[in-house]
Length: 86
Image (cartoon, rainbow, N blue to C red):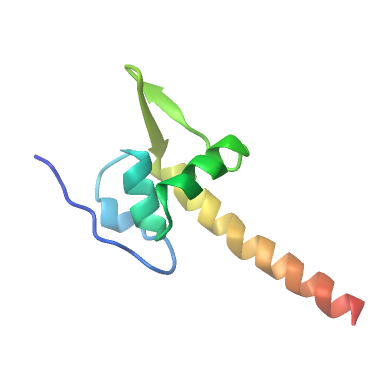
């Protein structure tokens, strides 16, 4: 059974991929509300791991969630650094 993912702007919600462990680059991009090219840049930069299953490139749902959680930490660190400088 094929499950259609809906675009999700804002925080990543693993519940929208109910039960799935892996996503295509396109599905990962849709979940984050970014382009496939942005996902490819994140993978190339080492910020988002890519796994291969029988030759098919996939992104782990858990890694996508961890990336989004890291964004919260990055923005807090950046804000704190900015506040300390002023």
